Image (cartoon, rainbow over all chains, first blue to last red; front, side, top):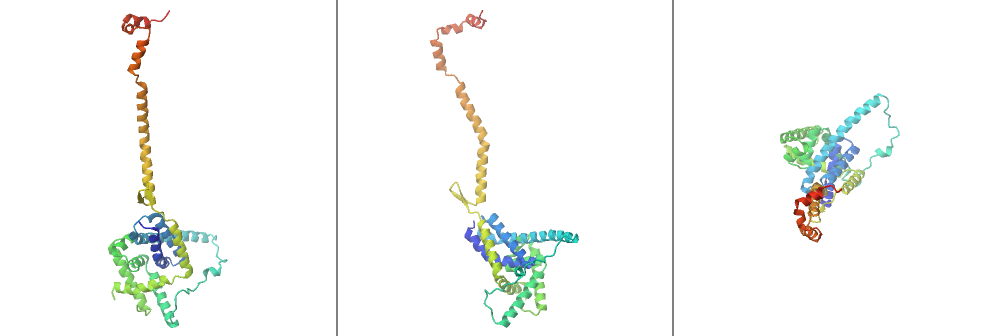
Length: 188
Length: 123
């Protein structure tokens, strides 16, 4: 059974990747943060008694379910918002604090030369946009298989589908990404 | 380029993108992790012997209590019956002693007329 330190180390090793996965899925950093926080809490509360080797698979399963829950909740919320705004009850957010949405530059990483840095950030942005634009299931399969490095069977378990579906989703995702990047003149 | 080769080349970019998560988000993720760790239930020792997860310990403990409660009425009934049987059974030695110390001779109880006289209402 996993010790507190093993769980802590595991969560520390996956939290940023999990956060990015969620950002790619829900396109919203606040929502992504909530999902990761939820997934961490559920893992700690319900599965801390499991062996450490099972944690990655369990965590991904919880995370993917949390992403699906987020979409379900968003759908319900948007239905109500549409209804209320149609009735003239939805107010516009005029009092929003601009400081809350102000981007803060990450000064932690050492920058390369300006031209190189610019080129890298453009490639990164293009890749992130291409990943975000993938259909949900394709992105899920691609991320689990090639970023989390699960095998086909593990990916199928997390996604709750057949191994054949995983292979199809991965293949389609790869071709779609390659096509988009090629169209932007990006070679990896 | 095949699928795996393409994914292998894309992976470092994705890793870099995760590393470049802003300082604020990194701090928030860290505090979310610490909050989750507070919810981790440490393994407990069942009867001070076997370490089991907290949830399992609770289940086992609950099941022991449940079984004890199930047997309790039966044990109580048997104890009551045993107690009553020791109370209800007269000691033969005591009966003999009472008969012999009475003024009435023991043969009187064998006399049928005496029993009839005893049963008769006293005038």
